[in-house]
Length: 311
Image (cartoon, rainbow, N blue to C red; front, side, top):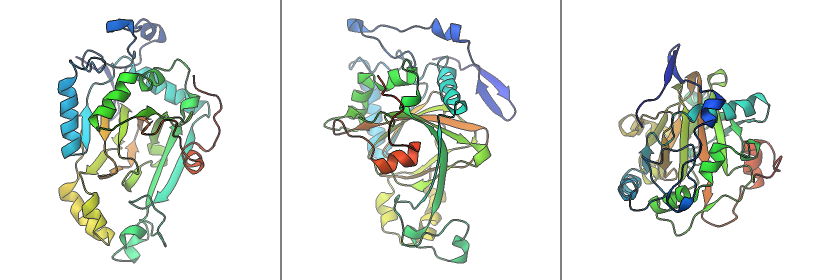
């Protein structure tokens, strides 16, 4: 991929939005055997459908995940498709289909016995690790609120992408989520709400995150392979004293895909201070048919039943 098209906007840069007619002319491309590849991805740079051609990519990602728990694939999306995906997320939001989610949690996503918020933590020093509370908030757009011909849905359902993730994490089996809402979804972090994702470890061993739009703040930060070290600490002060020298803040761009072993590494998304950060999360499961439980559906999407079944 050569050039991203940008238009300056205040302190930000924003992708130029092509007309729908221009985007429609992109069409789909064919690979060997006559099957379609997703219109959204740069198949020449990432030929995941061809094992012989993507072997170097696979080996690099396996190595990165093994050593750091993180792998970055820049330019995974074709730049001219990114505005369409952003538009889909924002259209759902303006149509009142998104759900604003907020929660308080500790680093292990547990409910501590007496959670202590960041604002009151200074009154109690040191703060017990499991009682240190973080705030997370964002707006989510569920899979069943996407257009049936969404290019994001097409990418999520593309078999070679799922098989690539399975190979990177060396899993015995991997399937698309059986959940009609949480298979793939958009996140919108808005400076107007001071949205952020507090420090935590994921419950899942793997995740796939697609960056569509960046903002001031909204930086992804992680402490590689920190689970064991943090689990032996008793106070948040101990953890915090180690963050400055251990935390990494990778550069991410619109069109970046990153793979992450989030249960191994403490991580956060910093507060968005200007603009809006938009990304998409792909959910795959190791047991066919697995889906989100009712508690998680209410927390993420504010409902437990889909508005329609995705096809």
